[in-house]
Image (tube, rainbow over all chains, first blue to last red; front, side, top):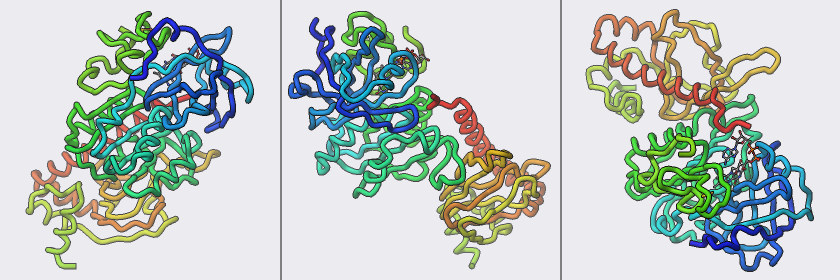
Length: 280
Length: 153
Ligand SMILES: Cc1cc2nc3c(=O)[nH]c(=O)nc-3n(C[C@H](O)[C@H](O)[C@H](O)COP(=O)(O)OP(=O)(O)OC[C@H]3O[C@@H](n4cnc5c(N)ncnc54)[C@H](O)[C@@H]3O)c2cc1C
Ligand code: FES
């Protein structure tokens, strides 16, 4: 896997902000071009970079662009605290630090020949968007695609134009649900797991990929396993606070696993004991 | 519609597809076929809960009127799902408004008729309680999850 683990990976390169797209009121996508023009930058869907706001701090942010393109590397960022707030104030042309890509990635190779069910909530769609791009770039190698996506409200939905486009593609089912809304929303309202009632999974031949808040992932796993998807075919992305990003500092440790190096994507049997536990 | 046809169609609905033949017949004795068009309301908060519905097609949004903010939609109920549990819980009043957001085709079951059957045949009553407890449990789980605001800011 394309994980940088040498000492160089502790030193950020400069990355120029080429474009900023505000996805929602508090979530935006930075399109970055590293100093070397991005030509040497390759990543797998699910990998992340450590983005550095100079003099403030670093955050682990997943890469949300198409892995077949290495210009304008996208990072979709939810503004939650110190570092992400600084990122939200940057402008086109500003420079930040970038280390990466780190981590493993989603099982896009293993999923070939199978149906793929992606279940995601909130900012969790960002690390899964490259999976969808990869699948669409190699469409014939995959079966049916299901995207089940939950958000707080219609205004909090990411990538709205793409969601609509994907939903019109052959053998792709996009189902969106929100927690709350006013009367202008005609879509589903409720918990993301409710969307399973509206799709038919060929459970034996489905690879499931889940990313979102841990409580959402827990409910989703219960639902998938009740429906008969074997646990080893369920993959989740774990989020833990990160520092080094390369398995040195122990900040992201989850039992015997380092989320930054062994993850962030795990097959469920590898990690199920540690779901909903803080750093241990 | 013939009773036999009805029971076949009903069998497609997940809420009753594993119900015994005998209990299905009791249910059928209280059923009617209904349709509602988009924009209409099936019931309003505070009204007597005289029915429950098995949705065959379409979508309904449950709304709470919140004064200045207007109506807030808290849940949608669609194909294969159950609309309404208040028919089985005293004082049998609706707690929400049910707005049709996609034309609905459904089976409506008369609550009073069913309550009488439940009293007369406790096995049937227990079957209903088991099934509606699941509906309530799912609603409770969903409400907790929404209160937790898991995708929060
Ligand atoms: C592998 C990985 C990939 C990620 N990908 C993305 C992404 O694509 N987009 C994105 O917006 N965020 C992503 N995150 C989360 C992101 O790293 C944090 O939200 C960010 O570091 C917060 O920094 P801050 O200084 O703004 O917040 P802080 O000031 O440090 O904290 C503010 C609040 O955010 C919470 N917080 C801080 N760090 C995390 C964290 N890692 N996970 C959950 N809550 C946290 C704190 O508990 C606190 O409540 C990812 C995290 C990991 C581990
Ligand atoms: S972040 Fe340092 S070991 Fe994972």
